[in-house]
Length: 154
Image (cartoon, rainbow, N blue to C red):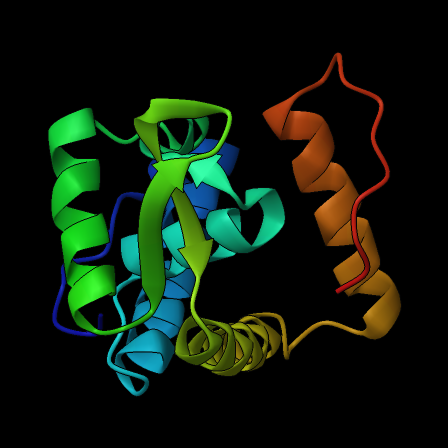
């Protein structure tokens, strides 16, 4: 954002400010990439969660992603209207709907995952492969310092 006034040097040196700027740039890159596939970031996240958890109830899906139930209805309506997900009565509990990817949803998710990886590659392009791995490991520790996890390779 070249037109924005520069933050004071004392602010620009703060890890929180730098992380926020990096996150904002990453968000812009990924959002633009997903838009090329006519999908918003939240819709992509729902498709990815459905792919991992299907069949999944609408309520469980919303809770797992931290999406308000009313917003989840709107997102699923959009995805269903585009032919990307199906809603059927849950065989384990007929009071609930089970959400699954349609074949077109699987194709769109494959495309948006590739576009997201490309956007993230652009984000970390100034770094060496070793620095990319280190960045992911360090960010993982910052996000949850008590959770020993092995970050995915970038």
